[in-house]
Amino acid sequence: MSCIFCRVVSGELPSSKVYESDLVVAFEDIQKVAPVHVLVVPKQHLASIAELSPQDAALLSDIQRAIQSVIAANGLAESGFRVVTNHGESAGQTVFHLHFHVIGGRVLETSLG
Ligand code: AMP
Ligand code: ZN
Image 1 (spheres, helix red, strand yellow):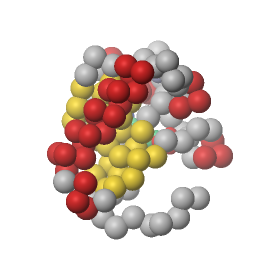
Image 2 (cartoon, rainbow, N blue to C red):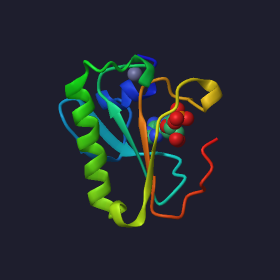
Image 3 (spheres, helix red, strand yellow):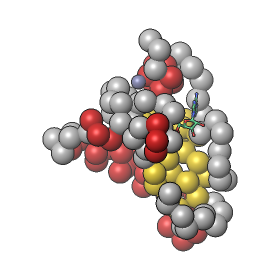
Image 4 (tube, rainbow, N blue to C red):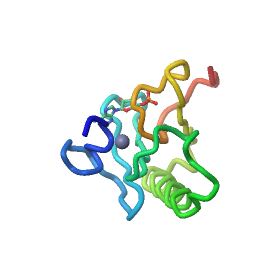
């Protein structure tokens, strides 16, 4: 298995997990850009959000549950945060397994691109 996040999901690679459900895992990014930097990752391999269909309702719900858990655990509703997902190299995607960055705990630059 060559996909890094499939290997994290299977436990072959270590991670600092902060949330897990049947469909999703959330763990600390190894190269944090802010005090809170968690990746919410479906256990199923999807290359990016472009492969996520509206019919994946159960998965979308679990992704939002994981995001809410990270918000609550870190007081991000008060302090502010950003959720980012990248598709393609030109957008900065380096791991081609769908993931949502949840970033907070400091003042974030306003630029999106
Ligand atoms: P992206 O550039 O949007 O594809 O984001 C990939 C993110 O995955 C980067 O922020 C990396 O620091 C992070 N990352 C890569 N490998 C690991 C890993 N083994 N455990 C945790 N985070 C990782
Ligand atoms: Zn994968």
